[in-house]
Every structure is written in structure tokens, then in C-alpha cells.
Image 1 (cartoon, rainbow, N blue to C red):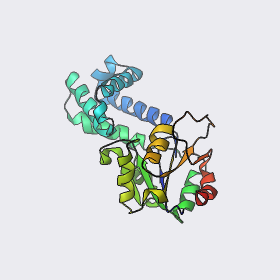
Image 2: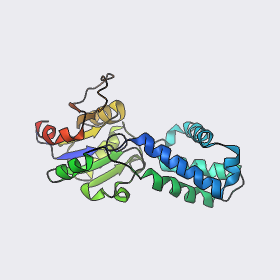
Image 3: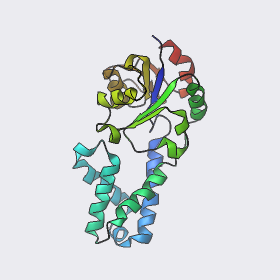
Image 4: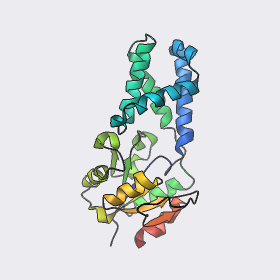
Length: 227
């Protein structure tokens, strides 16, 4: 079997997600303090995050579209504190720009450049990071998000739609991700080969096992031809 395509998850596969989101939330809160102080007078940054999470949990049917969920929450927040709805798009942009200020794991960019010379490369993500804005979009022939797909990983449709963009059958593609369920089991159920990115060397939690496991993305350069 010859692998023609490698698709990647983004958050916690190419970079650490938690510090990026925490940074973006701080940037957003600082912006609110200046422009919408009635909100920050009533909520600390941590309280506002809890308020957002609680709101989002009420709408599981929209979890495939994190942008829409956050904007909907911002709209309710603006209404609650009697601010104009212009706060929604402006506030989201502040968060989103900071959300895309990522720091790649060591060696990741070198690996991506090397693999892009030999394989069709893609992104399949539930989040709203943007590889074109980040500056690495030229390395990927396709980018497919849950918001575009209408479903989120681990639903097989998001993987199938992505591969249809480059007309590559699932058995000739491999998906690399950190989440055992959303990434590995989701991709496997869609017929792709799978590589679990597991830098912490955690025990496999159960379910469909990956075809391979790596602790660094550099291992992909020698591993992919063997799948």
C-alpha cells in the first residue's frame, strides 16, 4: 500500500493548544477592559471563561462550529450589558488573531517542509486556527474544518469530504493527530491509516488502535513509507 496523502490535526499536534487559548482569552479580556468595562467590572477573566463554557455547553448541536458558538455568546454578552452588537465581530477578531499566534513544537516546520516535497498534505481540524493566516498554508493542498464540513471529528464525513477535495481514496491517506477518539478512531472509521502523536507516551486508552505511534513528528519521515 502506497500512502499518497498525509493529513494533520492542528491543536496539540503541531503546537500546544492550552497556552495559545489562554493567551487569546487574556488578550480578549484586556480589550474588554478598555472598550466594554461594564462586563469586566462584573467578571474576572476566569469567571468570563466559565460563563462562556457554560453557554456553549447548552448548544451541543453547534459544537462543530466554534466560531459561531463564540459569536453567539458574544451577542448574548453584549445584550446582557447593553452594548451594541458591533462588539461581536470586533471581539471575535481580537480573540481570533491571538488564537492564531502559535508556537510550533520543536522541529515541526522542518518536518512539514520535508513531507510536503513527497506527499499531498492537508489539514482536518475541529478548531478555528487558520494555517494561511499563521503562514504555513502553502504547505497544504487542502484545509478542511468542522465548520465547513457541518460535522466535527470523529464523524467520518469530515475526513471523507477532505479527501474528496484532492480525489485521494482513504486507504491511500494517513491522518496524524493527538486525540485517540476524535483523531485516531474517527480517521480509522473513515478508512484512513492513522498515526497517534503521543509525546507524553501515555497508555492507549482503548478502542481502535492506531497503525503507528510517534512521540515526535520527525519520526514521520521514516515511518510514513512503511505504512
